[in-house]
Image (cartoon, rainbow, N blue to C red):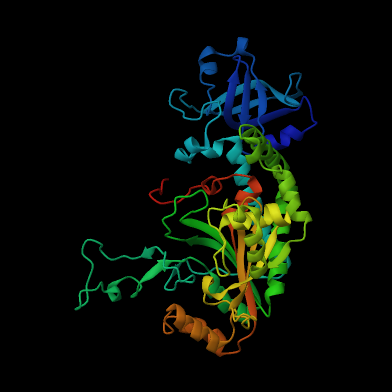
Length: 481
């Protein structure tokens, strides 16, 4: 390898040593100072050209976005803003960039504009930092489970089942959509399709994960999931990644302990391994906050917020307790909530979740024991309470600024209860026969949860739009690049 990474050179003490750098020009000032970035660091290295002894034609080609090779001496910098720089002896242009056409000029670009050119936004400092942190978090997830002897399971992306029962799924087909084969009764004949039956892109690897956990003990999945929900918000994607562990012989408390440990572990890993990237995003956030009115500003900076999660025990609260707190809360009494809480059984919205975390407890919260009616069919049912209300052993972890970060539950291992619940919500027993076998043969208590990976990256980077933490966002009416 004939060149050195800029990340290593910026830390180097070996002055007057000859070095070679390859990277892209971020800026070129005074016909003399080139800021070069090779992606290894959020910071650039300055290369100083002797313009009096460099051909005019070559100087003209040093433009923002151009790829260059620079050979020269690493020296201590006399200028402000950098500790080291390169005194250039030899400069080669590896790839030109026409300044009239290159959309990333050396100025501040809006995130909306950068989304339109998502294929080039990796070249900015902000997105360099975001995707380094995303990488660190993904690695930390695997590291966490590997250290605890979990088995990484690849669950199918194409599936015949709807794990959530919500019906918002993308269909997978090879049929001719202009002229699909039909049965005698006029319906589309899926027997002619590739898989011989209707299939979809998965919304979750959980159900298949349960099959593996009931033989291998502790497993996790980490893969892409898809939801055809027509939501054009800053929190929704049609294609996103989920971390879904499933553990045999775990009950609700074990499940909560593992989820809390996982979140603290991966956030600490990002803080430890990406300090420069998090610092850059922290400063970006501070700048952004200055333009907001005082009452809309965050109480904590990014680094403070991340440490706040690591250092606090998560508060564990039942849904029933949370409803009472919300009913009595000032925003509810003064009708400031968009969705007012008036009775037990209401589905909590993001504003309620954030109130509990940010205003009431001032720490992350794990909400448990939700009403059966608002949760999925596979969750373990509790005995009815004194008022005869039915709850399930669900748990959601709520974070500041985000709301729900994790959703999980102890699973219903009792076959009869599961069958009754499936009939109530209209899930055909025949379609789920394979899943029910885990309850027929050697059923055992087990639990699991799901973490939306992009939500986690959103939290750790301090970004506010989920489209900015996945390389190529897939949203309604948008599947570019």
